[in-house]
Length: 70
Image (cartoon, rainbow, N blue to C red; front, top):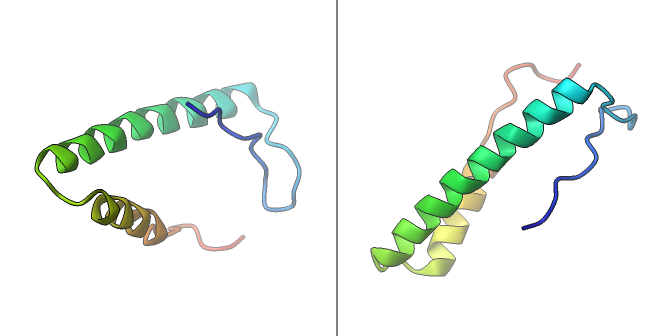
């Protein structure tokens, strides 16, 4: 598995709060596992791998930022 990147703010500076970085990494580890499980379920249900990947990419692309640009 790949490691998560160094987290950056919009201005390009590094998010340096250890607790924030820890929470972000834990959240993404959980999401990765849930997505992996859903992906495998789709494959087992005979959904085309390419369609599963497309659906997951589209889901991420459709995420909304409720805070807008600051």
